[in-house]
Image (cartoon, rainbow, N blue to C red):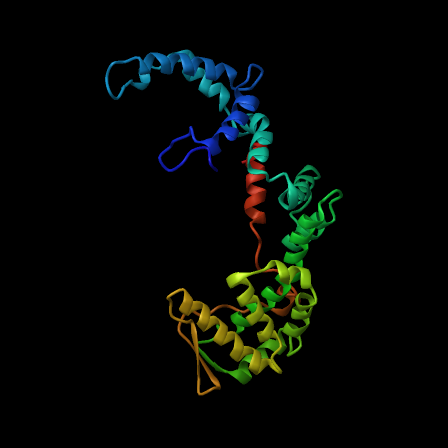
Length: 294
């Protein structure tokens, strides 16, 4: 977070603005840690005055008043969250832009004691936040456009990995039993292909992979889509220096080289279900900690 580098050097130019915020919000005369700061500074001054190269002090030598001030300052998660929440939100900038819109939705969720919303709903509500800059709204909308296709591709991969060996006809039958067909991927890809602004923002490896997935989705039938997904998977695994999880033998039979995956029921995976959570659970947990709830 740039408070210091790997050598714990905190006197760096890029670190100074952060430490200024610490001083202003936590250590100033009216700050919540001013008492601890004064006692700690006085104590460290005496320790560093020691002529030895590496000063050593036993814990029992630490003044009782200083120890108690540490206890008071960090007595409970609730207490710390009360005075540190706004500071950490400002430092991390999780209360600004697109993250800030997500924060507002999660904060309202907590204040109203609502059930935890699905990630897709959190993003939808965040994109509707008033006064959100268009660029930040686009970031949220891009995820909403992209994720349904990724979810369906993930489900198709689950189908491929659901048995140690099965045919392309078997895969097609399972795919249809889950309420999907040869148009499922194509329909989801259309929303991305028609969003020129989103595609223009993507470059490098991400753009290359997205183009491959869009081409995959345009396969004439499920068999062709499956073959393209296998080729895509093999290419990604090769780039990672790893072995592929599955092979297509004779152009018809799939051989799986990893543990099989359980298949969901159709009602458990409605069309367009999100599989990537975009750190929303972790964001919730972080905010709970800042409130002193965990």
